[in-house]
Length: 408
Image (tube, rainbow, N blue to C red; front, side, top):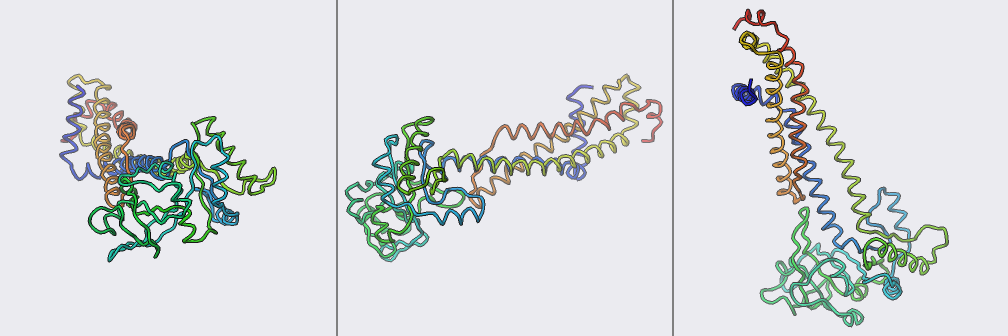
């Protein structure tokens, strides 16, 4: 029997028994769809984490009181008992770190912004040093960033995100307009380039003011996050991290042999932690999906056994006309593999649709991985072949005389 003919018979069988086919392939569809949806969302999340959560480049690292990642409440409480990092600590790092090509500092909180009769709450109020846009990978689309002189003189100037322009400012040129940030007046001197939304959260709803003005308005007893950029990756990055660590340990009087009283985080340390978490999550989901595929394979085997029983006379006729055992076995293997492949295709489409619907509803990033699509189709087909062996072998071993005596 030709391969094409066997595939045609399998598709005709599926079409002739639509409800039975849907129920037969449900396990395969669910299993493949689960894998595709999860892999698509995890790939999107990995891209998001690499490009959005940690906006700065691989050669930028931070020193902070509380690290970016922690794994338990007890660990977090232990970090909160550390001494704050002060503006003076940042100034020492900026002055003494010869392995750093740039340094910056930041503090932030949620606040309100008012302009005339328009206002916005829940705005990200950022206290920045003048170097932070470069460190944070943000370009200024209009106007300029504040200068070192404005920072040292606690100038009441601000760089804003496009959400503030759209929702708070009056019509016309945003530059030069006055806004009130938690009741304090600031003059807009720059507008950041639009960044869009990630996971449904706007990245443009912020106001950046000089860190000195920020600390003057909200109090100087808050901890700052210190940013530093190395002169390259590899050894230059390690050298810069070691220098910053030494400077801060000396300033904070950390005893020899004792752990740091602060945390240093690099881009890769955070991404590595996320990827290990997402990999574990993937393993769990793939395990659950494998159960669905096994159940789907068992259902396919059961339906193929029914098909062998229903087509006993047909098998007898084929053998009487010269079909060999391997021909009959190949026919039923192709049919079971085709059924599973159809289920795999439906599962791939369903998984992608689910992932994209999630993106539309909550903005969760998704990225379709070609390897996951191909793997899903391969596994589905393999399941069909594996669970089709027994029914195919049973059909191949039928005695043609007995098969011809079978009732139609």
